[in-house]
Amino acid sequence: MALDRELMRGAGPVAVLKLLERREMYGYELVEALEQRTDGVLAMGQSTLYPMLYNLEGKGLVASRWDDSGPRGRKYYRLTGTGKRRLAADTAQWNAVTGAMRQLGIVGRLAADPARALEYRLAIPTAGLAPSNGLRP
Image (cartoon, rainbow, N blue to C red; front, side):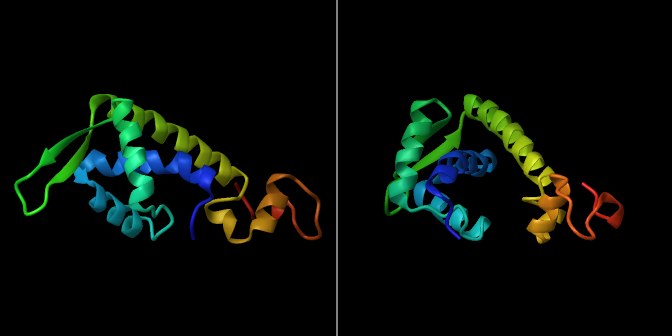
């Protein structure tokens, strides 16, 4: 499942920052990690990733270095102090959004039956659906 372009614009950079939190990585390694660790949801090609990395570098959130020690030179990216602070702020925002979506029944336990979760959360009266039927936020 590929994300809508607008969702990817918000999720992509924070996902890259999160991957770089653990260790420095080169571009293709980031592409592969995004594909594998998100089951393809946040997969992006190099033509999307590299402009994003340049943008993050321009904002001082990541720094890069060249490594010519192998058969091919590679540009490695790492998180800066500013990037760590931005990742913490972005993580807090994503947690708030996820919590709000959970409250609406879009993610989490109630999301298994989206119609019932939304009906419950929005208090839309329906036959047999009331807070007393065992659904809880």
